[in-house]
Length: 224
Image (tube, rainbow, N blue to C red; front, side, top):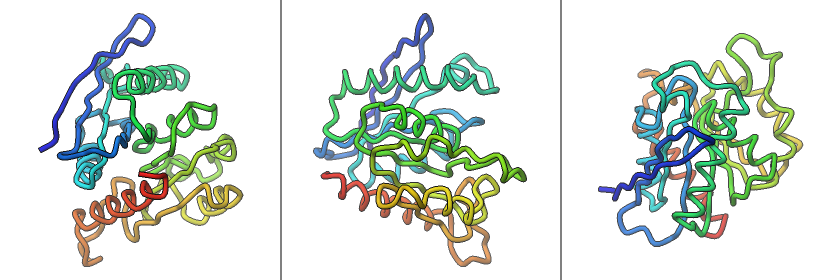
């Protein structure tokens, strides 16, 4: 079982809580800070499943709530407020945990926020994105790609081939100019929550193993 610690983070005159889960026997100094999706929170099933898969592979994880969730609200804050919260969390992580390798990212909206921070020069060693929301469902013309070319760090992005937020052909075209910096990992038959159909012959646990193994292998390329 992971060793869990909690810390308070101040964002202006407001606060949120971060939860650090240290992998059993972890000595690598690798920390992944995972931001939740728009409708999620730090303890939701999707965040918990992926972070647990990474801890099973020796990667420490940090979970947190954006301010709107910390205050019990369900509708996401404007982007500047999301960015400020995520930035404050990362400052606290660097100050308190002093990771050797800091990987930032998250699910859906949380991953998008992390990617914008990375594009703006937030110090980190890599970017790990889960179900990046390339566009709103049914609106492929509204692509969230303007900042992607400015991301300077190695990036791995996991998306399902049935994700209505991420049309594979459009995503492939959007990240092609980034070359080797960006590794796109497609999960065959998975939706936005990484769930697969029963007729695929695979289970959701199979998908988590795929994500965990691929993420851990990618982390090794960063010098873990």
